Image (cartoon, rainbow, N blue to C red; front, side):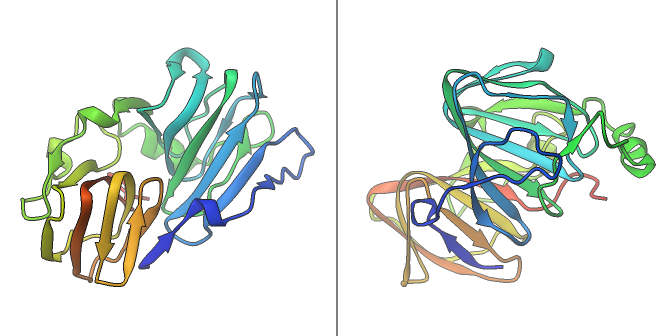
Amino acid sequence: MTAHIRPSELDWESFHDPHGRPTTPTRILRASEPFLIEADFPAHFHAGLHWHPHDTVYVITRGEMRIGDEGSFRPGDIRWVKAGHAYGPEEAGEEGVQFHLFSLGGDIGLNWADLYDVPEALTARLSQFDQPAGRRRVNDMPVVSPADALPGWDQMPDEGPLIFRVSMGANDTHTAFSPGFDCVWYLLDGVVEVNGDTTVASGEFFCADAEASYSLKAGAEGAHWLLFSSRSLRPL
């Protein structure tokens, strides 16, 4: 699954809704597991009650999004939601909202709650959790260096995804970084060179394979990224 994704090199396209409901521009960042898109809602855009067939993670990068009784999400916020949990409406703020969307386990499906019932298997799984959705802050996620022991599920603040930060100082190197699970890196700041031939910069993604080991070299300003496990807690 190893891949380097530069969103700026990808075209925006309209998200297709087979029922003809209004949609917004999206960029398909990755069309295989883990599925990733970037979405851009114009000011005051409204999306009604809906659910996803897989656990889903939002990373807000610009503007504001209000989601039902969950409140407002802004840059620096991470929102997660379990498969089959119907929520909404989603409403963009005065300046619209831009965000990355990660689907853990399959394609990013949009199911309108007034048209599609949640399958019994998803409803049963939802009952295993204390909460179906939650909020985190990027700056509150555990932070480690590539040489440290990596955080596990027991170090997460809730039942959401396994997410932590990796940080390297200016020009730091590490010969063999191997998280041991499929994961996605999202560069927050700086630049990191991977395996001597791939340079991942701020705002870009790197998809890492569970079986692989990666040599790392940070740029002159260091490198800091979010690392997301591609698997969910209690996967389907």
